[in-house]
Amino acid sequence: MNAAVPMTYGIRVAGHLDDHWCPWFGGLALSRDSDGTSTLTVTVADQAQLHGILAGLRDVGATLLDLHAAASAPSAATESPSATGSGRQ
Image (cartoon, rainbow, N blue to C red):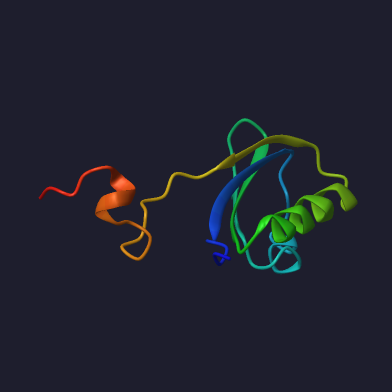
């Protein structure tokens, strides 16, 4: 069985969240956007951890507007010539 690869997600919610929520959600990055929303960026070990963050947002009454996986470059440990479809250099 393969170990879970940490993933980074962007979560946008309605309204501006206060900084005091960051430690409660595991120290995620929080930005307040000019359109009156907040964007949280978090790296999670697995979907269970992501679900816990989403449940926490629900518990504080935040309205979820968007959830997306942030683009990240594959690590050297996970990329191989056979995985990229080319064995040539």
